[in-house]
Image (cartoon, rainbow, N blue to C red; front, side, top):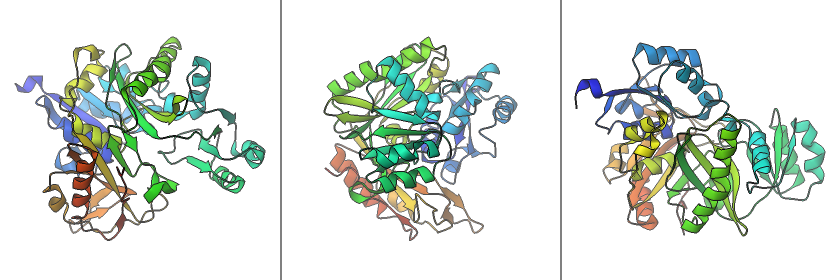
Length: 416
């Protein structure tokens, strides 16, 4: 491998997902310089963290040109909806992620629900409203429960399952802008991931996220408090149905509309008595799902993402560990409301000595060089095992090694 064949990489984002991506990209024999904007204290150990306005297309293009970046990997949804991918493609810079028009699958729940209805994709029944005020009467009198969703981006937290009319109206009070009201589906949830370059579909392992803040699926919705991969209830037969009835018709509809989808498409599914139904799409790797997937990936991530960005996805076949992965999120007190930041975290090395990976999300170094909390979801402890039970035991043994008085975590991730 000579220096000329190395690929310099820019990863956009600063959470646990981006730490996992940088961690895996750094392992590639083809990886040259690795930049991450803005990064975090954990990412700084494997990449150069840079100050860059990641949702500013012109700024990202300028940085990529200045540093001869060979691949840009967009982690969070904000830059996608802002058109960063469009600008990079126009500049001739390889980028992993969908265009702004394609990213409407995540950027507008109403857009996705309309597409699902037109394409016959199984999903919850719904009504769209131009504003929260317009939805008041509907929520006040509609049979319960209902699901109240902000139409736009909400970092995984703009969803309320309203068991009472009062809860529904309180959820509307927190929403500025269009609203989608859905019937409440029942059944286990699962996350299905595919990569596509617009022609080829590469199916990745499934995962099951735990969205509620507290044990036994209680408390408010969060961006995710833990994950198990593979999803225990998503059988091969159900996955095949989800691909045929949900993923493939979506990609066909997007292509027919002149907005072909490229990158990773993450379908949140409800496994109902009638089969899998679409809850929503995300246009990027989930967090903390990404941490579990990167742990299970036995192939070169750079080769895969570059092939996807260049329309050569058919040339690569990812290999996966047969082991299960469990990721537990360690969050700051107050999350998903206002988290308490600045508290000191210690003995991560002691946790990793057990054989896990601790991915950083909301962390930074203070003026004394101490690692401190700097966000809501702060760490993601990720472990592999022969089965979910073994991975779970290891992850919990590791998280107990970490000394942090300002955090909390669920104790039932992966519990059967």
